[in-house]
Image (cartoon, rainbow, N blue to C red):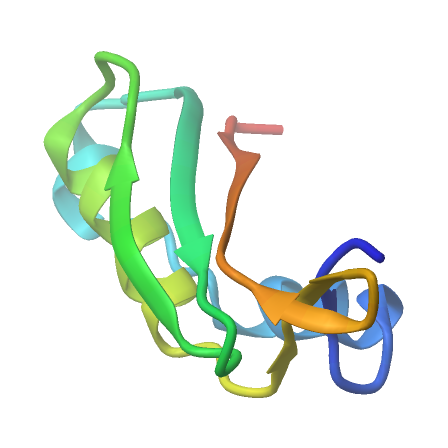
Length: 97
């Protein structure tokens, strides 16, 4: 069973939408891109080893890390009914409209 966010992924994406703030310095310099973030969802539902794995503006990377570290309520992955640590990756897009 894959890990999930308590309340479902819809609630998770709503949290992201409300929480991500374009860093002022990155906004001024018009920095854009996709921060590829990886983290471990532990067997207890905590996050560990949160990092951005690609080269991107450091302010954007730090914002992606801040937002994911503040999430609470992960349901861990399970194998044969037992919780396990799992590496999870996701992109964070930062673009001007």
